[in-house]
Length: 414
Image 1 (cartoon, one colour):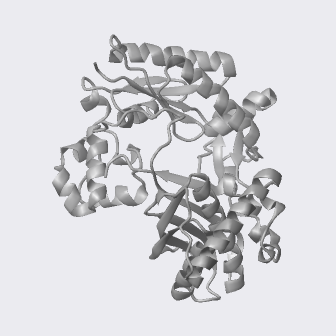
Image 2 (spheres, one colour; image 1 turned 90 degrees about the horizontal axis):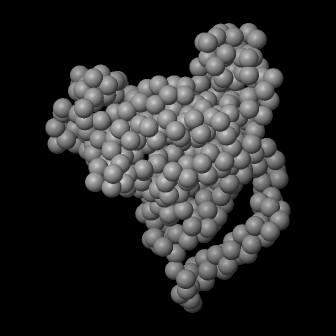
Image 3 (spheres, rainbow, N blue to C red; image 1 turned 135 degrees about the horizontal axis):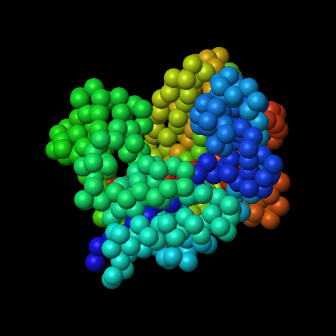
């Protein structure tokens, strides 16, 4: 039985939701933007009139206004975005129970069956596209293939509101000429490295021996080779399945530059609490703690440390990250953002091993305390109980773990 996989991508989702809920905005150039006061003042999504004026996703707001002086900018309505995302996913579930979300606006659908061929997938994709448009007013671009990688590429070929098929019969004409930057997870830095060794297209990348790419890029080289060749044997993961996590992390662009260790402590406490809270929610502990640092000049680096024990306590994470920061940062040098992540995860034990060693006993008491804080926050909200230091600089200490948190799944290729 051949696989038939669809990748459905809601076009300009944040802006499209705004135009559906406010029909009077449809013909106006509109962009959904981050909050400039929080230093996220970029275009997150734009509607078609704004696109025709030259507005590009990822532009700073001031750049977008240079292209389109009449541009209307609005903040994202997360409540409506999530509501429409849920409506569309329920539509997806009518077609198959194998739906794997990829963010709020994308998903893979495995519609494989005993008598389903790739041409049937094309017809299913068109039916799905029309259904979503009729029931929600939103448009979809859909890619059809026998694997997730090429289906994802296909959904980018005809936008907005189109269907593209990428298969063995047409890959040389459709896929091979595409730039390598179109492949999943290949960003600017990786593209530049590939260009430096004479690889510019997906077809060129697919022709390189995997061992050669591994020698140049390490394990990532095998991933690149797999993406270019469509070697995706993994099945589409149902939405209610629990993926295996590789790491749990949180990063934050601060509302003002971090200049003092006191400011750094506030930020790190918030980040470590949110990471530890989500680890406990997912019932995992970790042993490797990583700190990410980005300066005001946008220079970026990471430092990590392996602990002698598994933990899900924010105190342990904070002590480790704070020590890494002190060893690698000169107070007074402006920092723009910090990030904390924990890897080398293991399932959390249901039972706690008691210890009479002072350091272990103290750690166990802190763990009980943090579980109690989790219960309070679940009942009354995250900001119902906070460390006193977080109130010293309220904008800096106001980190929402639900909105900012990231759980990284295991990669496609290892």
